[in-house]
Amino acid sequence: MKKLTILSGAGISAESGIKTFRDGDGLWENHNVTDVASPEGWRKDRALVLEFYNQRRRQLHEVQPNDAHKLLAELEKYFDVQIITQNIDDLHERAGSTNILHIHGELFKSCSCNDKSLIYEQKGDINIGDKAEDGAQLRPFIVWFGEDVPLYQTAREIVKESDILLVIGTSLQVYPAAGLIHDIKDDCLLIVINPNETEFGYGQRAVVIKETATQGMKLLFDKLVNLA
Image 1: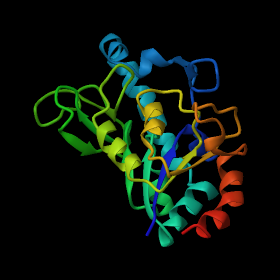
Image 2: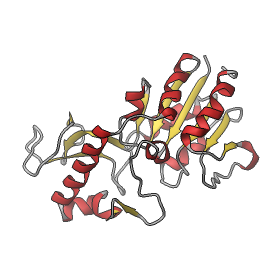
Image 3: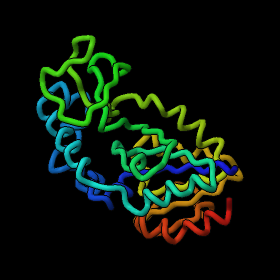
Image 4: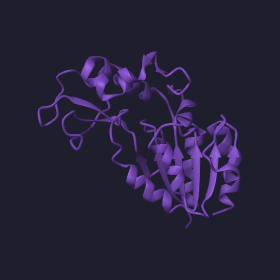
């Protein structure tokens, strides 16, 4: 079975109604990103950060996977599929995909603010005073700007072994995730679905479909299956 790796970003979740701060203004739900998604923001105002992610978590309970998520899950019938996602939602899981690496963390998990290896399921709110087993305040299990991305090397190894790399819903502007594109082998087929201008430095190598994630997957699905 050919190895198909999918690198997904905010664009695929946006079509399910999850907002992204990558709309050009640097704001996320009217918050400066550094206030709610950085260690500095956490030190400055824990209550603000917790409530911000509590709102995101509540919203996630109300949205559903879209056709792009579902078609990606269908591809497991034809390929050895691995999804590497920059998204913190669980929409890939709910759509039926089974091999998902969340390199930026997961909204439905929490961890100790002193020890990120102490991880807990978190479907409800996190409040000030909610503690991990080490006595430290619980925080969202999210990789914030300025923090290490511990799963990055795992993602690199997956990309290096890929026969096909499908980039969907991301312009690859956030590092180190953006660097994964440079780990593909010489004979790996690179496909990009993104309605915006995308320039990874690969020129003619990439097959580019300038569509939304859902429309792009509808156009691509049968062609991909024929490559299996």
